[in-house]
Amino acid sequence: MTIRLSFLGGAEEVGRSAILVSSDRAKILLDAGIKIEGPDQYPVITEKDVKELDGVFITHAHLDHSGFIPHLFARGYRGKVYVTKTTMELLAVQIADYMRLSEPKEITKEALALMQKSFSIIEFRQPLQVRDMKVEFLDAGHIVGSAFITVQAGDKKLLYTGDINLAKSKLLDGADLKDLRADALITESTYGGDDDVHLQEKEMVKGMVKSIKETILRGGKVIIPSFGVERGQEVLLYLDDFMNSGTLPKVPIYVDGVIGKVMRIFRHNVIYCRKEIQSKILMSDYDPFKSDNFIFVESKVQRKKIIDGDESCVIVTTAGMLTGGPVVGYLKGLAGNSANKLILVGWQPEGSSGRKLLEGQKEIDFHGSKLKVNLEVEMHKMSGHADRNQLELLPKKIQGLKEIFIVHGEKKKQEALKRALEKSYKVVIPKIGESFVLGSGSQQPQPSQQSVQPSQPHQQRQPRQQQVQQQPQKQQRRPQLQQPQQHQQPQRQAQAQAQQKQQPQSSPQPGKEQKPGQQPPQQRRRHRRQRRGSHGLSQSHSLL
Image (cartoon, rainbow, N blue to C red; front, side, top):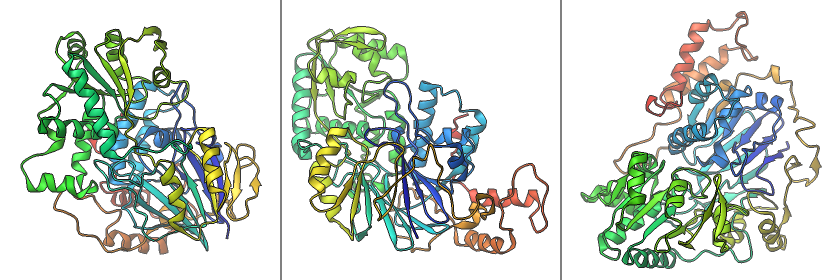
């Protein structure tokens, strides 16, 4: 049995992560991202491959790993999208924001409706059988609900990091590396450069807090652009701690963009955060997610008052790479005052506005106008990504590892990481469109020119719902906070197995006559609703 990898995006670049994984009988997609610096860029995937997918597995909710999901449904995908509970809830916010800002033309209301009904929840370390593949999510430590993925077919096993962090953060414990085994690793390389070593968390925070205090004391405003998911929440919790302790003077902390919505989602999923965060909420009256230090910005009028006001403050807002969102207005309004400060906390792509400012440019083209910059610009890196030391450590934690594919990074950083790893492993930096057979190292024709062919004709396959089964596993006891729903209840599994014996081998197609042995349409719809349960997006998160 073979596993074939086709790199459809995220190769020699950061953005539009998408990897097609094929076995003798199955075809799945690991991540479905977009690249949003400049004109949107999408994975290079054929319509045939989209329609033949047996499942889409999303590591986490950042758009460079998930933004292409609605496009899949616009292009004919009708299967499941497998996610963790937190990722499903975050995607409602992220994709709604993407639709509002990018307005992609090919995505219709019908496609969004199909997507909303497609989400299926998987808990960590609960294997899922997809034809001849076994797929498993493990905690990646990158953001709340993030996963890295193992895929096994026969005696071959693949591990895909998505975005991964081995170190503890304010919210998370770091990736779950217990009992890992794989023949091949697909690893990110965001911080794979020779000099990409993160400061210890305490040292990083100490420097940032000192800088913020200096700005406040001279009467300035501090702008902290941040990713809406994870970085923004971590920044807020740190600021809250230091203001409560008296280390930082008490000034307003304004929260703008989607960061506030995501704070509420994190609070509802606090069981996936560090035990210290859970204990603080369970054992005291204080909830850091609902601090009185935070003031949530609700309108453009309020935003203008903040810019024009005389008082010192801290503004935590999206977008982290200055690509859009409220930060555009704040920077245009405050960049001319040398008393103010811009603190960047996340990765800034080459050629981006953030990178130019860090390099010392005092005038940049910024969202349609020339921006003269007099405020101070600093980087205090709060990364949810593994640094170079962690990226070298990860392969050593994987038993049986033979080959490594490096993705999700700038080319020079990938080459630096390759030099370090190829002393012990076979290492490949794939290009977009290249395919490889696991274990052979042989490059295959580009998927955009020749599609991956299953061992049997696609129309002869059984319906997806008959082929995908979750492996039984004992439930772990969790603190008495809000619990996620299980992927399938045992009774539903038994019903599904009983249905499998009665259903035909070919997938029923919409609009065709009922064949002998098929269930009536009304009964099929009822079973679909039962299987779907509460795993679709709630009405409060509707994208329509």
